[in-house]
Image 1 (spheres, rainbow, N blue to C red):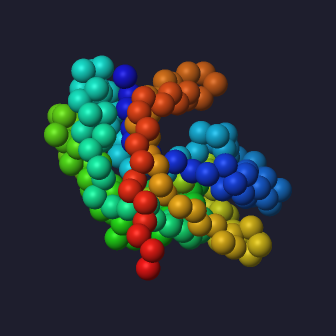
Image 2 (spheres, rainbow, N blue to C red):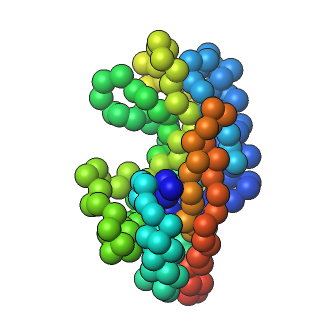
Length: 189
C-alpha cells in the first residue's frame, strides 16, 4: 500500500482553495488538471509502498505524543514545482515555521524507524492545487498574481494529522484514513 502522513486541512480553507482554483481557471489557466479540494492535504512525509505490518508499526509510532503543540500555519503564495525548467504542479506554499518543521522531522523519524528510506529532498511544505497537462504552457503562471482578497488571512490551525493510504485510479487518487492523531493543545501565551 502507498502511505503518506499529512496535516488535516479545515473545510473553510478547502473552500477558499476551490475559489483560488476557479480564479486561476478564469485567468486562462486551462492547461491545469485541478486537484479536488477534498483531496488537498499538507504532506508531512510521503512514505511510499509499505506492507500492512510496517504501516501498523508506523501508526503505533505516530500514536506517541508529538513533540509540538497545535500551531498556526500560513499559506504564502503560488509556486510551481519544480522551480526550474518545465513545471509539473502548481502549489500554494506554506510558510515554514519551527513547529511545522519539528512535526515533519518527528514524522520522518517515525517513518525511518519502520524502514522507510531517508527523504532525498528537503521538506517544502505546500498544498498542491493542480497538475499541468502535457503540452500545456504554464510559464505565464509564474507571473500570475491572485487578487488580494483571495489570499488574505489564509491561515489555519494544525491540530491533527493523519496517516493515509493512497489508491491510484483512473479518476485520480482515493485517500483512505488509516490513523488519526492529535497534537497537544497549545499553551496560552
